[in-house]
Length: 275
Image (tube, rainbow, N blue to C red):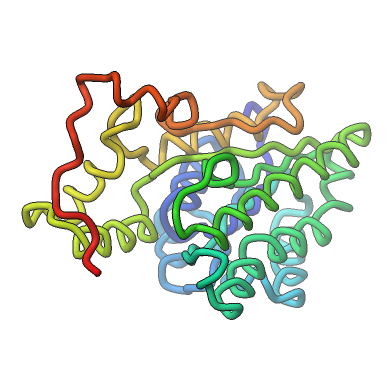
């Protein structure tokens, strides 16, 4: 971003959100990091100079307070990074309504509330929005109904902003990462390692197994996703609106029906999931 801007980053205490806040601060921008956990946000605040504002994106009053805090501290608002999210699994016939409601509240309703609070100020500044969805918004996996549905909804919510407010100067775009090293992904990999025979390799072996079919053959790093987000926020992306940028190591470029013909791909090792 060539000019100094004020950006709110949700889920800013770890992973992609933290990496984005750090990159923006390195560029001289003013950043407000939000999330449910106070300590990680305070650490980012100490280390980067970002303003920490603990809040729950699913709480309308908390969201209004978040926007007011940014305006009070910096006098304007130029960008939103809609990164806060949670994951819950389950097939349609098996998932609990409590899990469904929690995922939708955080991953869809939360961004909606923040957008509603922020759009008047983004219209004043000609601001930009970037939503962090997932390749799960575009492709599905087994027992992934709540998460995949929420990320697809987030994608279309952001595109609605692009269509409805583009003529008024507000851009909105989406990034769709694949596996990226983060606290949430680490927890999933730890469970995966327990469920499968990975030779005692733990989380690292699980990451290797989960990403070995990707064309790049590895998980992403938070900074790699942050670079894409910061570009979309910047004037360099001034004619990019309503775009869905896959930052996924080539995951969505791959035709799984061709893998049987690729002799570089070894059969999956391990004994599979425990009953």
